[in-house]
Length: 256
Length: 238
Image (cartoon, rainbow over all chains, first blue to last red; front, side, top):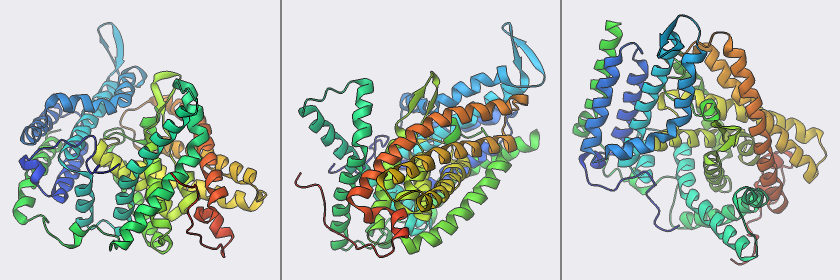
């Protein structure tokens, strides 16, 4: 526990992208993703343009391409699904390397691969340049209902509590002669899951009461102090990415 | 396949259908925010956070089923409905999904409406309806509670998965031809397995919590309105 205010994907740096207020980054990322999804799949050049945009932002944020690619592995199940499509798909077929593949399926696979990968890259860039605390401040400034930001704040706060309690319970089991290996560990976990929940809740409740007694009212001080909120200039800078992506998407729609 | 079902990546479902479900999800969430505000008191606020954290952690536990490409995770819809009620519960799941999409790239941002509809709206609603029904029918014993939790979790997972099949039927980007029935069958079978795992975890968690702190279980609170509030912590020194 302790000072865990950053998450695993956050890359500590002072780059221009890191310094942008979180709300403009969230808005830009969502708008960019929508533009990508709205692009017709036949416009292959457009996806190349989006990839260049992602690369430029990654360069500005000093996020290495290797890191971006390794972290994209989260997408793997979809990639497997995509590879099955050319074989499952219906309609017209083409012969490629001796395999009979469905054209529709090939386009479907390309669609999922290209849009999925670009979406994952955009999320990863946001995650790499924004701490979770900033993310919630950003959501709050974007007028996200307070009940949601409150749940999100506690969720991120309690994740560490939960992990800490799970570690303590595991150590306690080990020191009492349990020998967890692979599958047998699951049994110990299943039996202890209720106890884990309760212990984490009680610790979490104490954290909450401590926060209340120090003046917590449901929002983080950074929000109502309004320090560091985005200026018009910062909104304009961040808008360049979605505006470019929107232009590409519009051109692609017109051309196909 | 399970990650496919629940955390839909960008481009799996076409734009108009995604937009339609985004509107549905937004409307449902707006209603949940209105109803949830009345529920969220000093006891439920930390509970909602912990339920969300718990579901967040559990969704990362992926069960491999049969082969590598097919793995599944728990949803937590019934658990959330049981512990914090349907309104706050749906909000918890939605928060988990939004944070996963924004921070971990798990599930496309443009597909959030679809995921929220499946997991936060359909799964929680089905789970809570079953809980409300079964708690009235079954005896008020730990076994009755365990059965309720198990059945609600199992059914909510399978129905949530069918939500994806419906969405794929409406706007899947790749035409599977006659394979849609195959997709529905595969999804149902795999989610039956996931549902059993989810049911066991939900039952184990809910029964333990209900034994020690019955005041924390929303579904039980609704049945016994005058439950005295206890602030005493249980569990001894640590």
